[in-house]
Length: 167
Image 1: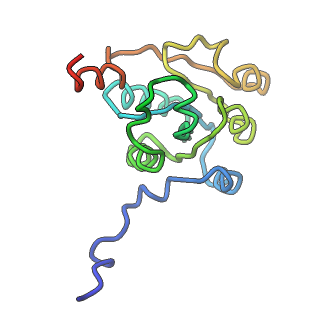
Image 2: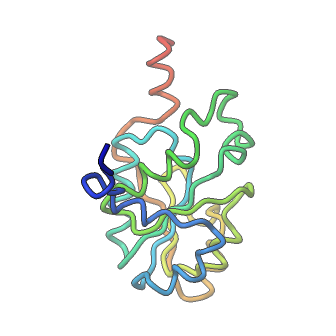
């Protein structure tokens, strides 16, 4: 049987996935100003992709940091969460045109990543007030900006799961 790899190479988006220990090196390749956002992004939906596109438009490149599976569980989103494991969530996230780099964090917050990356723009969804966004004080102190982007669509992973379960 012939080798099928040249016919079906790995998708280019896979190169956007960056383990945290390689971030310092990868940062040198990303354009500035750099946007940083984070979350579980368990089941990607219209609200997520709209938010991510809006966030990316604020800068020249964007890093998305995903909660690890253990970190998601500690958030109390449910015993069956995340539905999709980290590397699957990372691949789906990396496939989006608005995302330039995907990494992850196992802590309860992405504070250490934010300090390592030092983004000029920090973004979260509209359910976060800017002063409550982890790393906001530090980003503002460096002359950066913090955004809380309002939700345009009434959807969430929790709502999708309830619908699937017939709840």
